[in-house]
Length: 287
Image 1 (tube, helix red, strand yellow):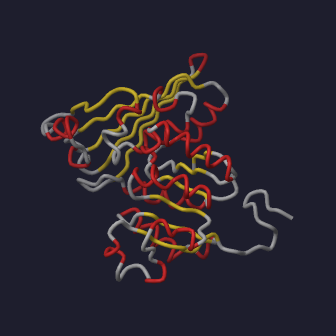
Image 2 (image 1 turned 90 degrees about the vertical axis):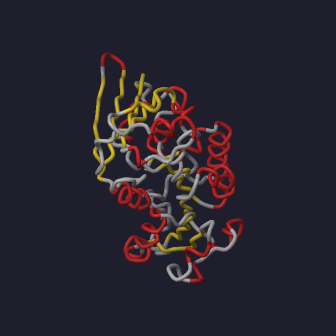
């Protein structure tokens, strides 16, 4: 008999094998969680890949190190997690989905319409799930339910961080550097235009766009603010508007060291997302 939650046959105790692509702070955290607590949750590490393989030496067992990313099939992973860079999603996401479930840690990559459509198609055809982790997006599944019911009319995501917590170039980078005395609005407009300008800083906004496909990257509004008076946390504000005068606003403070791109609570959120990555079939699923 098949378990409707896990998709496995009753009595099947096979662990789900997890591949980690990227070994920055978040990748290191996930690897340690899998090594320390994975077995209790029916998970085991299949492989770890990093662009600079030297970073894995001495910290990841040699047999778990993947030298060439294109060799990932040899490790027979059930779910692959990208926590590296949007280009990995664009270059390899389709191949990953043909073989396994795929959690996109850099959903800003999906602001490229061709990439989004390609991955949605691969998910449907292969029967594997394209997972979008909620990360710092509070109430993401509520947004998704509202959108699924055709009731969502508008969605705005505002992210406020200390200027040193941004990894920006060009005009936005200059604006952030200039925010030394007072808060400065770096961007206010459709999320699609912002994602390629701030790929490492607005994954929360991209997750909101995937949670609300009726609006998508063109319809969801993003506001990015640098505030020198926020040295110890990031702020994410969500404002959703529905039919009949419905509206909801949330404000989330995420503790973060000064200069940190990712808030502390986001690490635990990723681990929680991984624990539900099974049994959802060929679809996009916010976890």
